[in-house]
Image 1: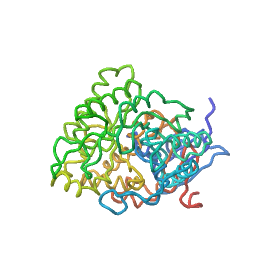
Image 2: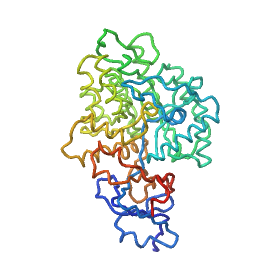
Image 3: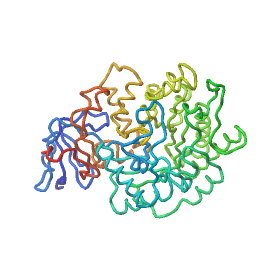
Image 4: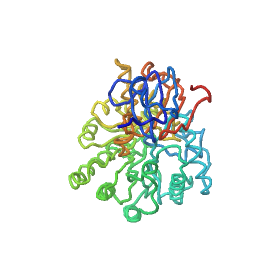
Length: 456
C-alpha cells in the first residue's frame, strides 16, 4: 500500500509521547492526527513536496496541555487579573460582569488566545447551566452554553472544551427539585463532542476551609461547624439529598464532578459513588466520577478513591498560598495534612492538576512547580517531572472520557501539541516556569507561535 504523506512534520530535540515510551526526535501529522512518531529516518518516507517541515532545534514536543478545571468565560472577562493576585487567600475579583452575548463570546475568544499562548489545547468548564442564568458574573449560564455551541459550529474555538452542567448556583446552594428539573431538560443543538462535550454534572457539596465552609467531621478552631450547600433541614437530610443527586446523575449515564473540600463531604461523595457503582456499574462502564479540590481528603479516603476509580482535580497553587489561613481556620498543622498529592499519586488515582482560573493564573508550568514544592524534594527529579506532566496530559484525558484519542502522542491520536523552548526533563519542576511555550498545535493547525520567524 502507498505510504501516507504528512501535512506537517516536526523535528525536535525530544518528542515526549507520555506513554512511558522513550522520547523520539520527530513527529508527523496528517489530517489533524498523529501519523507517525520516530527518528528522522523513520519519517523520511512520509515527507512529500507539500509537507511543512519545522526544525525545532533544541525544543521539545509534548501532548497539548489539558487544564481539567478552568472557567474560561470568566477568565476572559478578568484576565490578566485573578482572584488570588498576590494575596494568601482568594479575594473578590474585579467587577467585570458579562452582560450580553457579545461580551460572553468575546470573553471566550480572549481566553482561547491566552490559553493557546500557554500550550493549552483542552480544558474543562466546570459548571455551566440554568442554575446561573441570573448570576451576577454572567459567565456560567445557558447563554454561555449557546456561545460555546456557536463558536464550535463556526470553527473558532482555540481549544477543546469539556463541560459540566450546573443546576445550582456557582459556589452556592442547590436543591433536589432544581437538579431533577435540570436532568430532565438537557437538550438543544449539540456541537461536535471533539470540540464541545457536555459530559456530566457539577455539584457543590460544600465551600472551602479558609472560609470555614468546608463540611468536616471536626469543628473549626473557633468552634464553628459548616453545613453542606445542598438543600435540606438537617445534616442527615442534606447528606441524603447529595447522595440522591449523585445517584440520579449516575443512573442517567453522566459523569459527576463534586466540589468537596471537607473530609465529611468527601465521605458522603464516596459513599454515594459506591452505591451507584454497585447499582449500575457493569452496563454503564467507568463514568469517571471525580472529586474537585479535595483539600482535606484523608489517607483512608485516598485508598477508597483508588478502589472506586474516583479521580481528583486539585490546585497545588491554592495549597501553597493558603496553608497559613488553613492553619488559622482549622488549627496548627492542619495544612500539612491537607492536599496529600504524593499519597494520591502513589495510590494510582488519576490526578488532574488544574488552575481553577481565574482563581489562579492558567499557567500550568506554575502549577507543576507548586505541586513539586508541596510534595517536597524528589530523589528522582526526572521521574517527578514525568508524573506531574501526566497530571496535565494523560489524566485529564481520562477525566474527559477521551483517553482513546487525546492526551498522548501515538499514531491515530489527535495532533494537539505543546512545544517548549527546551526539554522539560532537563530542568527541575521549579525551573519549568522559565521555559517558554514556543508553539501550540491544535488538530494539526498552528494556533500559537511565540515569535514569528523563530521556527525554521
